[in-house]
Image (tube, rainbow, N blue to C red; front, top):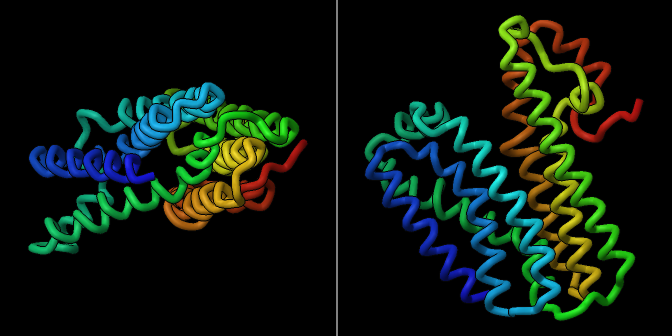
Length: 248
């Protein structure tokens, strides 16, 4: 754990230095996925149990895809409006407050969420195969919701005729936020895999934290605010659940 904390501290310090120099804190969103990849690799190289490479592969697959997805959307663009607002609101205190409220806070949250798999990497064999297999299945389902949901939304927004229209088809006809639902499910899967490796119940804390974050803090609420501006949102919201999918 100490090695992970040290690596994570250096990681966010470097992000802080670089993004402060280029004056674009919006790129810190790219650090979220890559940070978990770093944590998984550092922990795995520390414990060095062969079974751990399965979790490392899953976390790496998820983290690298997310970093690419966000990077493709943000790199070369102006600083995200959220961070521009921080600069205006914090004024002369921006430099100090950004250290704690952007970088340190994200590092702490990242460490807590990574508890979903960290303890699992310290184990050398599968103790409860059915839990491990169920966790792997949940990860695949959650990852599928993220990838397919993002792909469907990208196809929708890239069509000029859909400008100003809500995405209501595919997975978006089952839940208003398939990507965030998928996020919760895949982290729950990692936690179950860790439990299958005979860990304590700490991994559940990590999965619960990310679920609360995407459902009630930084994910769904922000996107709902934007979606409400679109015509037909009220009818869409009445028919399609906000988070857990409605199976048709």
